[in-house]
Length: 242
Image (cartoon, rainbow, N blue to C red; front, side, top):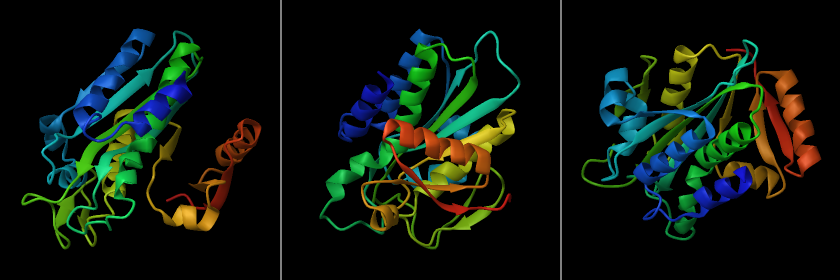
């Protein structure tokens, strides 16, 4: 059921599954006992999520961040965070993508869809694990209000980012929601799921998902799980703790 939910969310076109409609689909997890909290544009503005809001400012569709928490009655103190990129459509913004293949950019919400599907599966089987799922839901569109190359945004962490290319929007969305979950919850591990770059497909084809990690044990476990299920993962680089 979790996999089918993920596939449905990934495949829906952008005129059907807007950030708002995606947010409403997340709300349905409450029926399974998942606590769902929504951060709308005004709340994100107060939190200082300038990077995520900068990506969204060119679209008529309002952005949302959704926090989904599964907390069973009995669990240990460990808390896992799943973070997903939810760009419901990615035109590239002012640095607009080539027209060929742009229709596939409805798939740029696949990371967020995977997090929602995972939370559905975790709650459905009443997993004995404390898990936080967070997704950032935006559209990246060109318009008179869109951010421009050379714009400078301030992230929730207080760091400034100069936008070199408006089609590098995923890392801006993720920067704010990753910082949010790190500061609001006592997490031990965080897994970020995103369609950040087509270069992964160039490197690994359609066979593997690429993995960058600074936690060897959990990354090795993910590789083994992928082998067991047929969802193969290739570790591209082990990063130092930073």
